[in-house]
Amino acid sequence: MRDFEKEYDYVPASTKGEWRLPPGLRRALPYYARRKWVNFGEPIPLFEHLHKVFGKIAHYRFLGTTIVFINEPEWINEILVNQAGSFVRERTLKRMKILLGEGLITSDDPIHMRQRRIAAPAFHRQRIAGYADQIVTNAAASAERWSDGQEIDIADEMMQLSLHIVAKTLFDSEVTADVLSVRDEVNTIMGLYNFLVAFPKLESVLHWPIPGVMKFRRSRAKLDALVATMIASRRSLTREELEKRGDLLSMLVAARDEGVAGAEGTGGMSDTQVRDEVLTIFLAGYETVANALTWTWYLLSQNPEAAETMYAEVARVLGDSTATMESFSQLKYTEMVFAESMRLYPPAWAMGRQSTKAVEIGPYRFPPDTHFFFSQYIMQRSPEFWDEPLLFRPERHTAEAKASRPRFVYFPFGGGGRQCIGEGFAWMEGVLSLATIAQRWRLHFVPKHPVVEQARITLRPKFPMMMRVEGAGVQRQTR
Ligand code: HEM
Image 1 (cartoon, rainbow, N blue to C red):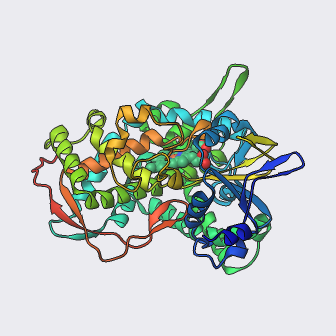
Image 2 (image 1 turned 90 degrees about the vertical axis):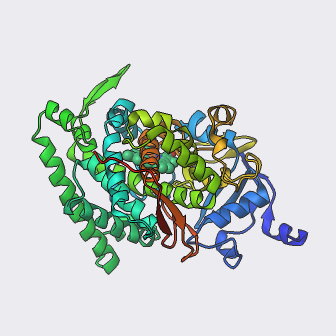
Image 3 (image 1 turned 180 degrees about the horizontal axis):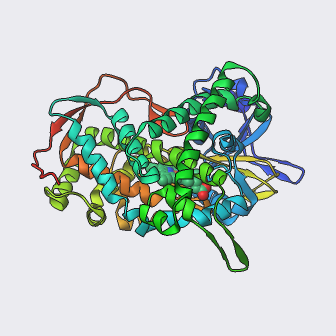
């Protein structure tokens, strides 16, 4: 970059009245539309550019909003933990209220705090341990459909697998027509999401008689009817029956807010609240894990040494027996492989918050309503924090390495009071699925399509990811 170009494009840190702003882009983002780092559908190149040019912090303007992009772990900690009370979720994500209502992802306190309190027991370690068998059974069923030499699209396979797992654990259903409909309607709505959120006055647009909006309304109505039927079937059960059934939906219907010191409990969730949480968990827990698994298989195919180490661990820990919750805690290298994959390809690739009051972050002071973004993808590939960051090295995630790493250098599940509620579930699902498949098969990448990442709500491969299946050589007994 030549100096005059720098001066023309960038502004240094500045003081405006009581506000101290970091350096950033001189003009609003559309001005740079022809630069190769600006692509309105793909924000990662912009974030990479800002990181490269400005380092820890930069600002830019877009659609009349000032956006601050942060790459400093301590400052991310300020936003997510120390000053969390001065922030709400950033508005782009909150616009998912059109689908998710006031679920955990889209709501703010006090609604969020209450919902989180009620939902938390359903995600406790002992409770999710009960899902280990279902994860393994479904992963084994996926693997048993494949045959030696077959070419499969692993991205599609992992989507199917995580759909089966979410169907079983959330709704206690085999993948019936109902769950497939939930998936199809959610996909239709998410497909329209980018189009819909482009409208500033979204709520009024949702009543317009234009085709995209009408399709959205139809899909949402269908989805609501489906979920309402599932909730109604749980409402007729006693608390004991719900507990016995054990699926997440039953847990949410049975859950009660017992209150906390100084605040009385507020009872259970209404049908609308259960509906919002069910769709939130479905959306948050399905594509994220599927993409994490897909990228893991890709990285293993490119790193044969790590793959061999993982296969050896799976053979040693499992032999020809079926994986269980106990084996999960022994599959340490497999867990490190999954962790390293989420470092390079974090399914949740960025997070955003909006200030509700004046906030001080490092030497800067920002007005209320400033938008902040930070990106797992950028931070977890940053050469300031990672040695040879683009290399796949599971050893970066030993217990000692984790203990010596500053918080928010690695944060695939976010952090603070809104840290992913399904994190324990995701680790278990990831590791047990990898091990169960690795027990039967080795997967070899077939370069039929380019490997291009696409940053949508999750980070996913843009094209099918073909893999050739080869027997792992371990004869297994079926249960
Ligand atoms: C590899 C898989 C997953 C990744 C990478 C992931 C990542 C994340 C991240 C980064 C957040 C925080 C977002 C923010 O604070 O802005 C989050 C929140 C959330 N996740 Fe996950 N997630 C995964 C799997 C799951 C699963 C399996 C479930 C449910 C079964 C789930 C349910 C949720 C919910 C409900 C929230 C909102 C929590 C709150 O705000 O209180 N996630 N997730």
